[in-house]
Each structure stands twice: as C-alpha cells, then as structure tokens.
Length: 271
Image (tube, rainbow, N blue to C red; front, side, top):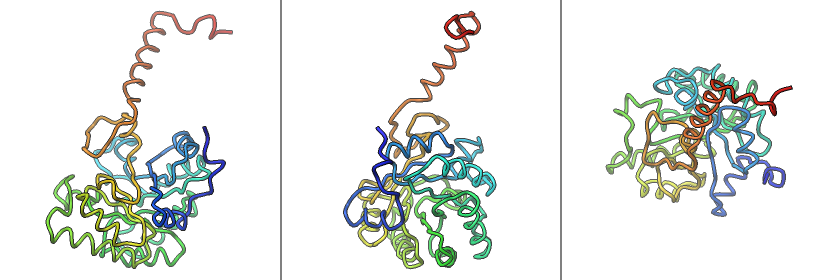
C-alpha cells in the first residue's frame, strides 16, 4: 500500500526530530525513476543517488570515474520519481576536493539542475570549510566518515576503519567537527558498532550506518545489493531482502526459450 500520500515530506528538520524521538531513519540508494517511485511509495525516508552507480549501473571497477554529469543525469530521474522522500546527491570524486569554490559550484548543480534536496560528501576535518560554505549557501550537507570509498587507495582497500584507539578518536573528533561545520546528518561506514554507538550518542545530528551496527540513528544499503542484483562482490553488512538477480535471469532465459520455440507471441499476445 502506498504510504507517501499520508506522510509529510522528509526534511532536514524532520530527520533531526527522528533522532530525538528514536524513530529510525531509512535510506536506500536509487538511480532511476521507477526504483525511486517504488521506494517513495513504500515510505523510505531518504534516497541517496550514490556514486555507487559507477559500479552497479555504469560498470566501472570503482566509484572514482563517476562524473558530475553522470550524477546529475541520474539524480534528475530520481527526483522526478519522488514526492515524500528527501533526495541526496552524492558528490563524486574530485567534484569538491579541489577548492571551496569548486565544491560550492558542484553542490549548486545538484540543487539547480537535478532538483536534489541536499548533497553528501566524504571526509572529516579536511572538508570542514567546504561543508561550512556549502551549508551557508543554503544547501544541506550529509557527511560521510569511516570507510570512504573515494579514498579507498589511500585507506589501503575496503576494510573496517577506527579499530584502534587513535583511529577511533580521530573519527569521533571528525564527526564533531562536521556537526559544528553545519552537516545535518552523518553516514558512518564500516566502523565498529561500539564506535558508531559512541559517535551517535555524542552528536545532536543523526547518524546513518552502513556496516556500523544497530545503534546508529538510521541505516542505508545499496539497492542493488539488498535486492540481490549485484554479485561482483559481497560484504558482511549487506542483507539480501530479495533475489531479483536470479529471478531476472530465469525470466530472460524463459523469454529466449519461448521465442526460439515460437511459444511467444501466442494468439493471446497477437492482433
């Protein structure tokens, strides 16, 4: 049953309120109109147009090649499919690291050209000034700490972050710095659940976990992973809620067989 018609539009204020009341925030990625529409009807709170589209949509080996134009293209499709959910555009690699001015220009593109409601960017204290300036311009910013895929080469691969005391302290400090800079929420990716719990209790802004335990204020998954449509690699934190990849292969195989054997189209599908 559709839920979006009876629920108010999600805003930065409402997600902050959800943290206060303990109402868990739900977020998934989407890259197209149909998927976004279905999520919105189901009642998802936030849709992230993630740069993960580089791997699950574009077929790149990582998120690094994704361009601003590609992100804008897919974000436009998602915003056209949503009525209630907040849509966040994921700022791709090198779209915000060069300078504050460059970051501000690209964040503005997500809002003006694609109709997004905010942007997400990776990094801690080194990105604080960028976050501050973007927020001051009227654009909501979601931070991202822990495993930051755009820095995967610097981090030495896809691995849990903040396992030792000094690394954990740095992530906690970065979280507080981003909050002070004006971020309205924070993604915590692949950090120990105990650290995510400490960060969550230390902030007034909500945390959204991915591989960070149940104590975060919300959770996010890549839609292709949770629907069983992406098999190039799997991670511990992904739960598959469906096996659509298997069902799609079955349907494709049946279609091919029926066309080859002239079972389709039948009289019922002909004029």
